[in-house]
Length: 559
Image (cartoon, rainbow, N blue to C red; front, side, top):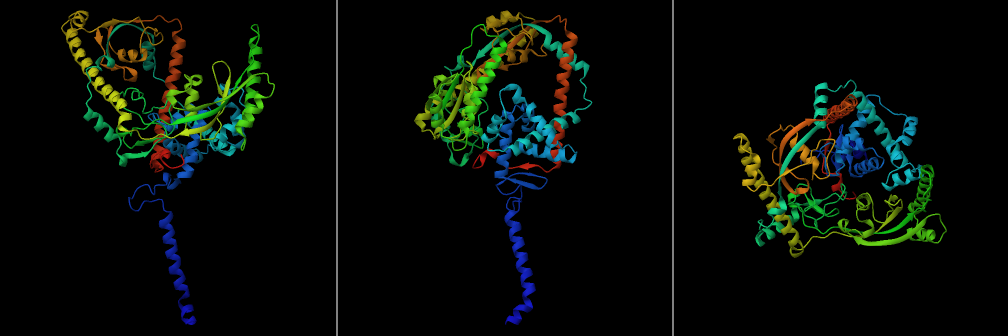
């Protein structure tokens, strides 16, 4: 029998080997044999036939947060995409990988020495002169990254700047467009406005119990739910604030850390998450009233360095935040030290000491700050600094119908009153437009129709009087509107309602520095054109690379 086995041994081993190879090919293939698409659910991004799985993609996503903290705003905005309004970093990661490949292909490879020299010139050092190497190390570590990762990010940043420069080489602004832009910026408008405030229509917007129940049931279908981002843009939009979303008063936004649906129209009604923090606050000593600017600057830098040194101790791996903070309350220092804690609170219901400090709150409620982590130092208006430890979390939960009822009623009334205001504005526009066509007095027609035509102070792109509410919206509405004509119906920011502008007169401001201003406008136009060219080039390179993505990186466990 042994002789028989040896006779077929070679053939049997070949068959077994083939079976094993095929099995592993199926097991580790990025292609989804069931769906025939990008691949298995853990293949987040695919570029040049290479799959970037969840763990690697999540690490690269943290490059976006680090880049923002380093002041690389243009780099992040361009790679994230100009139309990406949320904090989903998936497109950023995909474009960064495309950028790396193209930089390598074109021979744009910043050296280690160039990277080292570039770090001290990063925007963060202009924004925070006191930042040093230790601060940078702690900042990088806060995002679970290393100094090697920082070097990779700086390398990408340098390659991005070089590529944008090369692609935009030779770009020149069009004189006629520059002149038109200059005229628009220097036009002085005399105008009037008719407002249709949404609040004025709320009483007429009735909401029934059946509508409330239907709204609640549609928002809480379990099969619609999917994981959501925990990263706020600036101010998170919570379920408790149905009017938070600008221009969308009818929506109740889901809380960060909660679950949101694939469709934003079906967001489940969740309570907002609550976070609690321990903190230490450092307040500098007051200088003499006759202190020079140089003395003030030196004192500020010295104080910031002391804060940074203490922060290093607080953020040290294994450090006991309570013990370290206690030790500094017992030491004699040249500055005041306070410690304390904030019980769990919602973003939009912060303790009095943090109210109005939106940047601090956005960081404290950011998904980048993990529980038990220590924040970077945050400056306050009085020159003091806070360092926080994220010590407690109250998870969001789904609301009951009774809890949600006031919010649903408010949201539905907002939606209905918004529609009523829109209808009224469009009806008014038709009447006023007809008056102009029939050469009637627009003031008389407005008065007869009970439209309050309010005269505005003279305004321009450069001069926006404080008396004008929503000046940016007003300016946008009158752009390209001739004297004696009406604007289209325009919407006020924040879903406050609608308005119609009437342009009485346009004058051109006499500018003695016209040539200098034309040069500035021309330079800005060229930078914008360079960015557009780079975006078009990047889009084509991504297409050529076969770049594809699955769901948002934020929707995978561990994000």
